[in-house]
Length: 475
Picture 1 (spheres, one colour):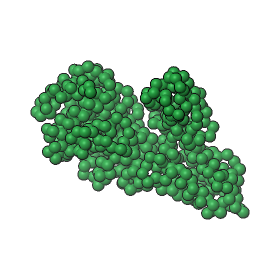
Picture 2 (cartoon, rainbow, N blue to C red):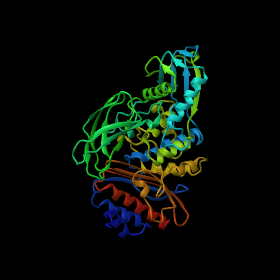
Picture 3 (cartoon, one colour):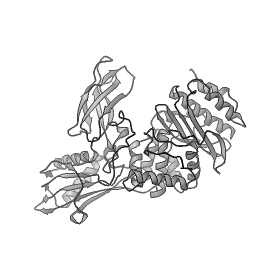
Picture 4 (cartoon, one colour):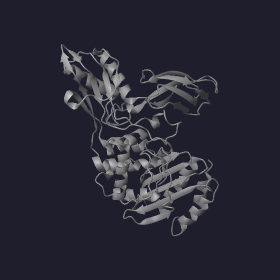
């Protein structure tokens, strides 16, 4: 098997002893694909002593490694066992089994509501079954009104710096206070028999009322994977499909962002109620309810513990959850959430004077962070009560709960039992941060960020793995 060039450079460089790391880094920095790259590295021990550093104070785009900030801040503010809730209310009066009013689903920003990803979370169908039983238990057999989705607790607008090609796809979903089913739907295609021919839309799961598609999706070669994109702004129910999905399967699914999460929740629950025999005279809608003194609570559903939400946020690098946690920190306001994150970082040893944050998930190119910001925070977290839960949310080599390339890092090496990390990647960006327990039993916190490289991303992974192996052996 061919060894990537950067791995060869590392293998032939001096060990990471005195001056060795700098020697290796200089050779790597001048190698093919790195001439125009900017990168920063900071490694510190448990006492905060710098072990290895190169450009630790360069402001760089971190991509998804940024999620470490908001997940740590959320654990610190709310605690690992915190559960967010969703409430069901009605207004008006009940007469002869008929509700003369509306039924409101008030979102509380729970990422785990009806989630398929979070451990211990009830499915959407199980949540609806509980709510339907509560509605009937309140004596409601029909509704002379509508089911209404209320997401007024949060400002759910995505950052303007997110790319147009991302909006409409699940990883750029709208962070609504009433998020259910992970804010996504799966869109199934039937690939053509020949590459280059159109791929036909089959269905969505779950069904999304009113959603239609302008289909330009093509069939790619077998094994080519998901290279399909859904283009649609929030609230837009006509999506444009472009790109390719692979040949050779009876069907193939990509994931889209729900165009209106609060409306979807109302429509889906309204349909469930109808199937359970509770009919509504008006179509489901979205909007804020009347004042609290005119409402009667029917049910309150608590989600999974925060530690389980953080686990998915970091292991699967789930952008939506990071953005929802940001809004929880800001009382619904993402701007206030960013200020809360900055304060948390500052209180825990990070220099935030040049920190630039546009989001919590790292999808924005405007985010600018130093490698030292990560390392300093990670050192400070070692002494926190919630550190075990935070560490458990990081990826280890071969992690079955993780997604993407990073779960293979360190597999089959001495790093297998001693590495925990979060990675990030967008075009031209690779980043890695986490903890390493060395051969000598020392705990190191590390952060490595590279921007504007031009080699394959796998070579950057090999570089990071080589750095970590050197640290493991020498410290």
